[in-house]
Image (cartoon, rainbow, N blue to C red; front, side, top):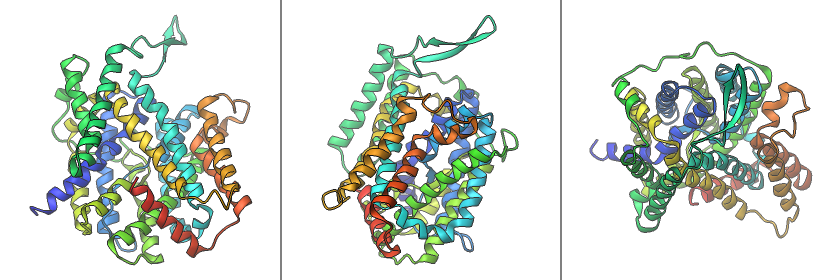
Length: 452
């Protein structure tokens, strides 16, 4: 245990900043109260731990039983915000679509490896690139201290007004300080310190924000030391067809990404991963996502940074991540910890977000770097056009305003648009490779991403 606990804690620290980022993004985008955002964080940490136990420890027919940590996928952020913004579904509609997508994932798990030929590196690299670029808007607004305009009701009429707190010099200075701390740690440290550079940067920024009077701890003092994460805390989920279809598409993309992670992890641990093991691992993604929807959180997948950490440390035991899952559950039962995370000012998160989300985009670019553009020049068109479609909701938010309202969650997600266009264009230009070739390419692409 003296060895096991520190190794498990290292896995938790490596994924912690990414794990809490999604509930922060979604909660603040939906303008939830600080208490509700803090609860989302607690629910996310708790569900992270449960999903990790399902994946690493395993259940009958579920779980790949390898050293994997599970966390909320960034691929779901854009679609979920679009679902809440463009439909009447709201947060409960998001939870309903997550539960439905998880059930869908459990059902299609045995067949998903047959879809792998549709997602070669030119497609997955493009999708991950668009995910990172789409999230950069969130990181930049965080660094600015919120959003440029806020909605206020004047004389009973809602209207958009400039945000007086946006882009203030003090906030920008704090975001810049966080960024500089992270860059310094990346430049001058190695090993564990380098792996947790983002987390240490957030801590340093929080200390500076406290000294400057920007960070306040009122909600932390009011929060309980211990709290149970109950299912359906916000109410019973609602189910709407288009949001469910949207999230099911996200689930397919997430499972294809997980497939590559499993194959790469098999190479790192020198363990043969057969189709039955892949099915169990993908089924655990679906079960974890159902758990997420029930416990008031979002879709789950294997975290690539933790797969990379297995290669860095050389520790291949799944019991390390099983204990890591237990630590995550304990963190989810500590409301003060979640309230502390929620109290971190957006400008602090902005400095870290530029690094986190930028690395997602860079990982996509790294995967694309292994794509053959010379002998297959049509791959250039796959990337160019798919990225162009992915940018439509960002650069022209009203581009699809004349389309049916129910389609807006799909059309206003650049990630889903890029995924659909990349798959279609790759099939058109390059055809569909064999399953064996697709598995080899997926493992190579995942290994490339983990060393980015």
